[in-house]
Image (cartoon, rainbow, N blue to C red; front, side, top):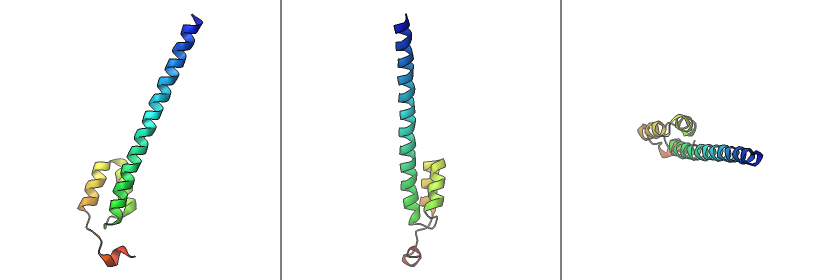
Length: 79
């Protein structure tokens, strides 16, 4: 009986670790996508940080904001 109880605890622990790893994986993917949208925003009038911060909240809305923003001229991008 004790062995069965120990195995059940171990199984629950492994499931919890797997769920934490899955959440971490999705967090890394979301931050990478937000960074990509921010990088795109760096070449536009919106800029990197606003695009990145909007994309952290929602990547699709951040992408729409970046695509609606005007591209920088060559003179403005050198500043």
